Image (cartoon, rainbow, N blue to C red; front, side):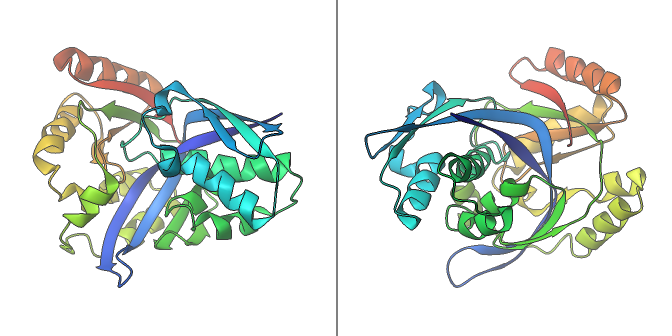
Length: 281
């Protein structure tokens, strides 16, 4: 029996550069893991199948489950004839822009690597991970990084952010494919990635907060997320932004104490929202 932790991710910067011929988009992102996580436990079973034990995932067709895809990819790649049962304790919400499915897939690759003694390095796993999903290579490592291309190019920043974040979960979800399908490239944030990276390298918290951005906020979700962003800053957050393709809205605060205070004020003002306080890792 093997246990793996699957950490959620946030996009501190997300620029959509161009649409590719394969239908995907080339992106430039600054990504970080956060302390919100799912827990996955793996055990070998004799029947040559993949069983996923998770109530929160029962509505997802098995062939669309990224845990299932990752498990069968490795089993097929390395001619593994035994099956695996995966027990998932889910905390990361789906369709929230937090990479929950990608994190679970990455944890599956790491977990089965250990369970079946494949002795693959993280770099080798990351090369396989892009076949599962665009965010999966980053989630293999969970280290602050600049991520480009479709998600396969990763350059670590080797810094610790220690940001105190409020995650607000609105009463609507965002489907990544739908967001990108309807997105029109606007180039409003050209140069911000470089400014954000420089601020991170220089431990410039003010510069980080001023240059956090997400091109995808200019999507069909705009009218829904704008009031939530404004509410966060009105109640005391330094800045606010949407992560990934949404729908989670994030507020940055000066301390854990301040973050908890802002969160309480936001949730008491709008009882349709849910939220938690987390830290970057």
